[in-house]
Image 1: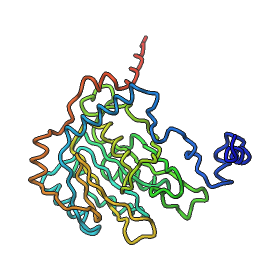
Image 2 (image 1 turned 180 degrees about the vertical axis):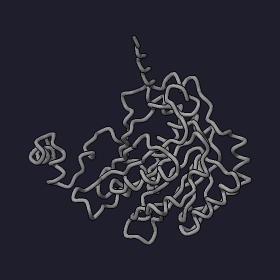
Image 3 (image 1 turned 60 degrees about the horizontal axis):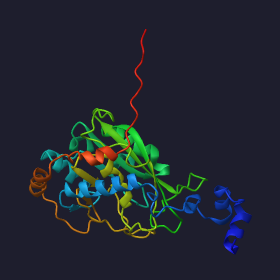
Image 4 (image 1 turned 60 degrees about the vertical axis):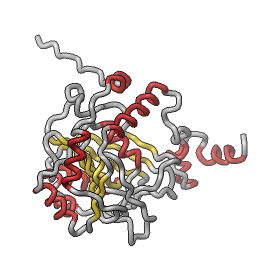
Length: 303
C-alpha cells in the first residue's frame, strides 16, 4: 500500500467517500475507476454503442448553426415556426453561469416548433429544477425522465454554478425530458430506442470542453429515432467569471444561440437536407437485437 492509499484510508475509512469529500474536497464520483470507458467488460453493450454511433451519423443531416442575440432569439424561433419549420427533438440550455428565467424560457416557442409526438429536454443545474419543470409545462410537455450528469471535480469546465440559497454544494446537472403526445416504450419502437444508456452520466476524462457535454448529445441520439433535432442556447458563456466554453456544431443538429461559431442555417437548405436523410433514423435489426428490452408488463387476470 503506497502513501496515497494510506492517506485516503485515514480520511474515509476505505469506503465513506462523502465524508472523504468533507475532509479533502475530492468529489465521491472521482473515485469511480472506469469513468473513461464504462463499457469495458461488456462486449455486447460496446458493440451496440459502436453500431448505434455509426448508424446515427449515417442518417444525420449536416451540422447547422444560427447566430442570434439573446434578445432576438425568441423572435427568430417564432419566425421559424411561422414558416412551418418543425423539430421532433428540442434541447434547451447549456453550461451557463446564470440560469435563464422562467419568463424567458416560456417565451421560447418550443410548442409551436414541435409536432405530436415530440421530445423536449431542459438542461439546468440542480437548483433550477423547478424552473425546468415549469418550462416544460408551459410548452405543453409532461415530464417523463431525469438524466443526471455528474462532474468529476471542482476544476472541471462543467462544474455547475451554486445557489446562495443552498448550504449543500451541488456537483450535478439535470436534463429533464418531457413528452408531447403519446410515446410508449413497447409500441413506438420506430420513434424511440430505450435502455441503451443509463439515466446517470459521469464526466469522462476524455470529454472536450463544450457548451454541453458530448455524452448528453449521445444519450439523446441513442434514445430518439426522430432525426430533426434543435438545440436552443438561451444564454452565453462569455463575459462571465466562469471559463468560456465553445459552442461546437454537431451533425444531425441545428444549434441556435449567441455564441455559435458559424452562421450557416437557412430554412430552404435545412428542408432540403431533411428530405434527403428523412425524419426518422431507420430501425437496424442488428442494433435492435442487441438493445436491452424492457420486460413486458404482466397481464391482469380479472375475475
